[in-house]
Amino acid sequence: LARLLHLHAAQGGSAILMSATLDLTLRAQLVAAFELMGDGPRVMQDPETFEAGIRAPNAPDMLFIDSCGGQTVKNNADLLVKRGRYPVLPPALAAMALYTLQAHAPLGGAGNRTSMRGGGPMVTLVDPGQGLWPLVWANVPYGTPSAPKDLPWMQAARTSENDRKVYPADVTPIVAFFGMPRRLRLVAGDGGISGVVQRPYGANYADWPHPLTPYYRVKAGSELLPRHPRAGAFGYRNWLGVVARRKSGDDLARRAQVLQVWQQRSLVQPEVIVAGWSMDNMKPRDFTFSRAPLIELPDDLADRMEGMIEAAETFGVVLRGALAPVLAEGEAREAAREGYYLRGQAAFESRLAGLAADPEGAARGWLADLRAVAVGMFDDLALPGLAERDTRDQAEIVQARRNLTAAFAGYGKLGGQAFVALGLPVPEQKRSKAA
Image 1 (tube, one colour):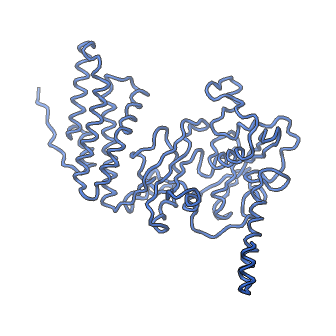
Image 2: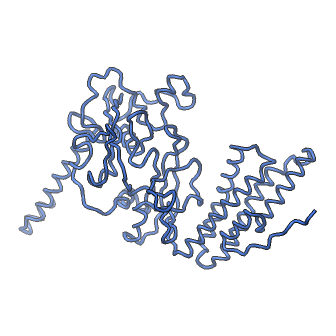
């Protein structure tokens, strides 16, 4: 400020001083709006002071999505994630946990609303690789600046009794980043945050296209729904509609707004951070944190890439079926199929890099990569101890391997489908001889 005032005096102007005064005023207002505790507005907390007089507030554990719930504690079923992990939270940690819960809020019982993107939404962030501030700024969409008064906790609470909803037209766009589906108040004690009080019927957001989340449609013409992470690694088979666009005219999947407009903002080729909780209603199953390239391809190559992913998924089904004589139905075979995708990740990225120069060569190379991974996994699981099995099991394993390799040659229904997806000629199907 002193340097600005000196410049103002030297130039004899008033615009710089006015700008500095406005900036300081806005900063003071923002600081006041982001207080965690105190008698005034509290960041991400309900404006109504309903925590007074509560004898036994919830432990601060409730701010963490992976904490055990009340019913779990009542049934003494908190075996892996124990109750009472955090009797007191430092204010900074409490603030981060509070924000995360409001932004990702899962189902939480009667009247306790989910986030505006549902429970555990997928978040995608453009990362230019230049540090924290460029990362933050890259994910702020273009628009009109908002004032501190537009923040939800700086005004009367928007509650959802009688199924009242909050639509984008009702408030300013900044609410997308500071939604408050839960009515929460923190309680101070023991030098930190020692409790949380909650009331039901926080804001119930409807029809919000969040700028950091990809969306999809179940079928053409249906409503857009926010994507949610699935349990397991985020690999190439999950890229379509998240970090890679589908070809023009395909409106079944839509990347996050900040990814769609990135090329209008910068020439930097960024990575994309993909993160979020994989939820089963109220239960967290997994947390995804991954990095992937931001992929921009012309329509013909986007179609080719989609075919490569489709072929990999088809052969994944073939592999799963081939493992029937080796692995029991259920988690064991699903884990094997997950391993098949993980083993092919580096090869996919390598083939994608050569797609523009030689599309057919990339497709044939990818076919060979998938065959090597699938047959290699089958042999690793089936061949050890094969000689000690009974003859019936041996015959089933030999036939399963024969069917697997035939599919990678384009034979059978699934093999033919995979070849079509890759844009490769399907061999003439052999007909069995009449008995």
